[in-house]
Length: 149
Image (cartoon, rainbow, N blue to C red; front, side):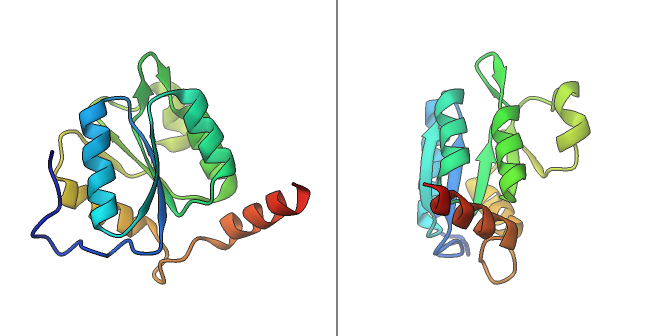
């Protein structure tokens, strides 16, 4: 497993919650370990679309790292929910973004596999507001969701 040991990323994601959606077990575990070392609470990793969609719609999240495909399906439903909730995300994939997703998500940060986990943690940090807090839109979405529960 790759880790971020020996990097300047230790603790840089403290106080955040990151969703991980990845169907390759060893890559998912590497991402999880790197994010945890950086101080993030990890939601997932999820390898099934239905589980990822449920988490994207219901969990309190600061950011997400998504593979583009889980087996034969794309993660577009997850992207749609995260966008609706104002939660920033990036793609970590060895495949190009499909044409069906390019119109909506072509400007989302994209990191090619394989990459150093330190680089992935740094990219996740760049998704966050300067203060490390979630966006106002994400906060309002969560408050509204709790009020209707």
